[in-house]
Amino acid sequence: MRIQKLIIPMAVSAASLALSGNVMAETWKMALGDAAGGTQYELGTTFADLVEEKTEGEVTIDLFPNGQLGSEQDTVNNASMGLLDLSVLAINNITPFSPTVGVLTLPYVIQSPEDAKTLTQGDVGEELTQNTIRDAGVRILGWAYSGCRRLTNSVRPVAEPADLEGLNIRVPKNQIMIASYQAWGVNPSPLAWSETFTALQQGVVDGQDNPYITIDTMKFYEVQDYVTDSCYVFSLQPLIISEGKFQSLSPEMQETVLEAGQIATEHSYDYLLATEASIKERLVEEHGMEITQPANDEQEWIELATGIWPEFYDSIGGKEKLDEVLTALGRDPA
Ligand code: MLT
Image 1 (cartoon, rainbow, N blue to C red):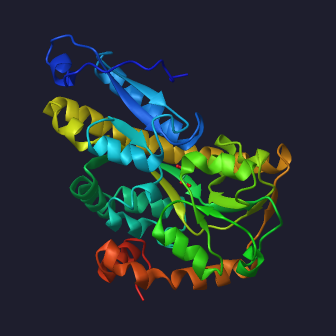
Image 2 (cartoon, helix red, strand yellow):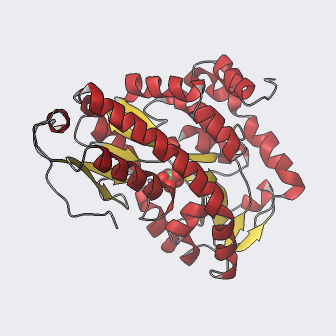
C-alpha cells in the first residue's frame, strides 16, 4: 500500500532539478478526504505511481487518507497557500472557494458517468480548471468519478421527499446541497466530511448522501441501514495541485504531472464502471443494507430540487453557464 510515513519535504522545489539531471529527490504530500480504497485512492495512487515512474523515482508522493491533513475544505486553503502539494476531494468542497464550479453540483444536471466524463474532459472542465486557479489558487490535474450520491439513513426507508420528515441529514458545507434538502422540506445539518462518520455513529445525525463506492470505502454500512437509489448529484473528485507548486516546476515536469493526471482520470472512469455494481450488491448481500427505489422515477425529487437552479445562476456565472453545460450534454436548456 502506498501510504508511507510522513516525510518532511525538501525545502526547495527540486523536481525541475531532478529532471534536469541534478539528483535531488523530493517527496510530495497528497491529502485524501476518504479512507484508503475507493475512487480517491485509485486516482491518487495511479497518479503517484506514474509521476514516480516518469521521474525515475526523483519525485515520490505520499498519500495521507482519512482527512489526516485536515478537512477537505482545509486542504483547498492549505494548497492555495503553498502549505500542501496535492489533494483529492469532492467537488462540492471546492465550490465554496470557486463558486462557478457549482454548475457541476446543481441537482440533476449530471445524470450518468458519461455526462460526468463529457463535462470534465471537455471545454467545461477546462474552463472550470482555469476558474479554480483564478479563484482558489489550485489547479485541477485530474478527476475521480465516484458515481451518483445516494441518500442513506439509519431510521427508515425513504422513497419520496415526505419520508425525510423528522430526519436529521448531514450535508457538506455547500449552499447548493443545503438548498436541495430545503426544497425537499427539511433543514439539513452542514458538517465537514471528516466529522461525518462519528456524527452518524453517535446519532448526532440520522443520514447523509454519498456514492455506493464511498459508502463502502468509509464503512458507512456499519452505521446506516437504508439507502435510497437516488441520483441528485454526481460525485466528482478532482485531484488538485497548489498552483504555486505547479508554477515552480520546470516545463517538462509540468507536462509530466498533466499527463499523469489525464491517465489517472481515464483509469478512474474505468474503475467506476468496473466496480460500482458489485459494490452495491455487496452492501446488500454482505452488509445488510436495504435499498429503496425513489417513488415515481424520482420525479418529485427532481421537480423540487431543480426549482433551486435560478438561486445559483449568479454564483455559477449566469444562466448561460448552465445552458452551456446542458447543451454539451445534448439537453435542451429551458
Ligand atoms: C462529502 O460528502 O463531503 C464528500 O463528498 C465526501 C468525499 O469526499 O467522498
